[in-house]
Length: 87
Image (tube, rainbow, N blue to C red):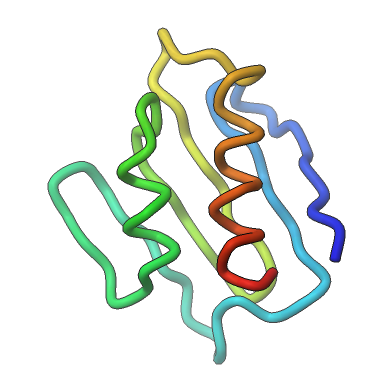
């Protein structure tokens, strides 16, 4: 299943969208530095070097990177985490 990566108005944030539902229901999930989530996928994304925080809702996850991180290095790692979880 393809993962679509979209830029956002924030140059430090990218939206990763899948064809399948990652999060059930109408609630969003966010993880800030020093926090953890009941969702392993969110915790694994937070462990990637350069990730500042993550936000997820239904079929997408928005990843916010630290200002000194590079999207060219980070994007394939984010996609790998999402793919490894079956999305």
